[in-house]
Image (cartoon, rainbow, N blue to C red):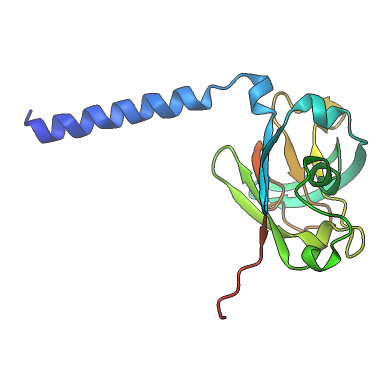
Amino acid sequence: MPARPLFIALAAILAAVAIASSCAAEPSEAAAIIIVGPSRAPVSLGADELARMPTVRINVAFVTERGTHAASFEGPLLWTVLEQAGVIDPAAHRDQVSRSVLLLGRDGYRAVLGLGEIAPEFEGKQVIVAERMDDQPLDGHLRIVVPLDKRGGRSVRDVARIEVAEAVSGSR
């Protein structure tokens, strides 16, 4: 085999091993979420910190690629999680309507919410960081659940990172 294809094959094998080892996290590590906000160092919140927050129970039904999924979820409000992490200021109402919340799953899946959607002074949608589904723990992962969405695309499974960011304008 010529050296170049052998080198490419070896690089591919090493990359696959690196990806597999990085994905093999312990359940306690998997349940931690990194939260990032404007002008704030990233904060890691684990299952223990989330379990100490007040929880909300919501019943949802949304369309998926496999049909309609109905379930009951429990966990703290996303707003509460962001507030506890110190990445939002509940009194800064102008900031709430000009910021977005990027939700990232461990598999690279991403979805976006407007901060005003979950801000109590605006829409107040009860988006939660679910720890339980149908009275059962989610086994080492957390899920963002967005009630009232017709499709489940913004209900990110195995959420790893949440970023609050300023809205970006295409013109100046």
